Amino acid sequence: ANMGRIGSFVSIGGAWAEVADTPLSYFKTTTYEGGTQTPLIVAGGPVTREGVVTDELLHVADILPTMLDLAGVRRPTEIDGRPVPPLYGRSLAPMLTGQTLQPVRGGLDALCFEMLECRSVLCGDWKLLWMAPPYGQGDRWQLFNLAEDPRELVDLADRYPGKVAQLEGQWRAYAEYVGYIESDGTSAAAELGIDRFFEFRLADD
Image (cartoon, rainbow, N blue to C red; front, side, top):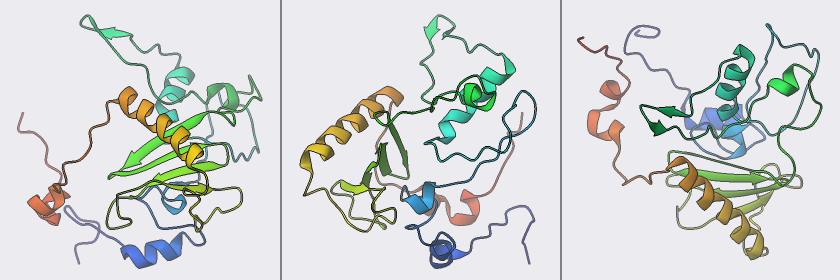
């Protein structure tokens, strides 16, 4: 009865969300493939390439540098005398405008990201995955070869410990770069209640 009104929250539930992402694993809020493989259509303005479908490794972090690049806006390197860290993402503008046909990321470039303590490192065909409860135990890294196993069914961590160590090093570098803060386990949704958690309030001023 409250659908579409202020304070409403509609969900198809975990089971249906997983079905919706078949044959990939799990759903959004996880860093399994079912939670991160998302289509994106870009058109208009200075975008000149048409009819191009790419399976390149791109990320939501690439959107801001792309928009700045396409708008011709230079991001400040410092504010009030304090240095501004560079963005983690990469501009897609050269690819979208046809300036280059080179891939945005090569096979040796690692892409790291996290969501709700679920962590991933992608590099070439390899994916390192750390799954927090309730989706995993949150006690070890898993390793998958997405070229051979896009459904993430066969954990290869024990077979390739060197690859795990290499990609875990990429994760540590990423965590330091972005200032990753590990959760202390508290849940704002649990503390506030789900209705209050999803309630949007404007500041009084």
